[in-house]
Image 1: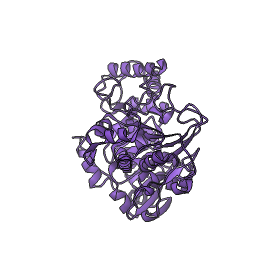
Image 2: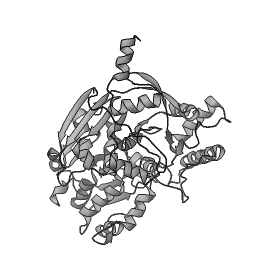
Image 3: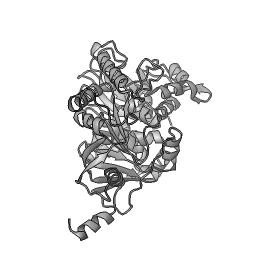
Image 4: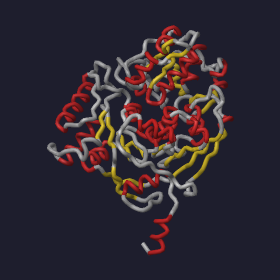
Length: 443
């Protein structure tokens, strides 16, 4: 590279994602489509992909090899754990043996007090997500963690096996798409409505291998859990990662959960981006994504002729405490008319159903009085279908309103079921009416 080109690269303005990757690669600057060796801070895996990752690691580095960092590998079984399925149990046994041999400190074992629940909610709750760091995970929804100012992306088992042995990965720098949201959200509108609207606008391939960067006064006012909902679904637009700058709210969340030092990164305001999309929050409405793609955007008010068989509130997208608080506020003093399944994402959320109150009543009591099914143990449960004994799994032609992140054919079990993605408020309102319902009818 010529001297003048080198100086231009060093001095170029960079987006938040580019700055994190440049620092992790040990270079002054990067550009979109650059291929750089990136140093990992965290490698996350679970019971579905963990055994495959371990197999790659042991094949390539040897059965006696040690992972690159005992503190850097975090293993959280969560997908197929509350089941009688022997193959699912075998996967967890494989993880236990590996953790024991490697003496890994961060393994959250099902059936023990250390168990936490869904990895994408448990990882930040346990202090493993820090601003400015790089997180690789063997799950596409690893992009959730960009809500705390980290670069977080899903990778395959082969790449994860390499990271497990070296702590590094060759990565192509993604271009950035910026989404600027300004103003206050109307009553009845949640973060899920924001990201479903965006995916509806750009499509499931609208951000292919891009960084989706979210900013603006609307984002600033959201809770950390609501921000996680938005970044969680960046992958549903094809994005490499979703990300938000870490503000004082994010740093307060992180400092309550870890004593480890970290250095946040701020993107340059004048950095070039591949595209910019602007939204006035006041124009957003409660919505759903109809079968069988997250991009099938429809205002909830336009779908009130769709009768439903069940409602499902749970998953890394819609099973956080904020989600259950929203649903409980709407259900308080009302009755559901269809089976309503509740699956807290983590043990911390499950405790919150017992301890958090509305008008003096614990959330769990409100749900019980409304006629919801008893909450299941924290896990992914029916979000990914699972074995036939999975809580909430569809088995026929059910029509479901779900707070999960995907509504593909067969996603919740049955190929004949129809899944409408929605916010917890819209899900709760629909549970009361027995049809898709705009929650503003109750607000």
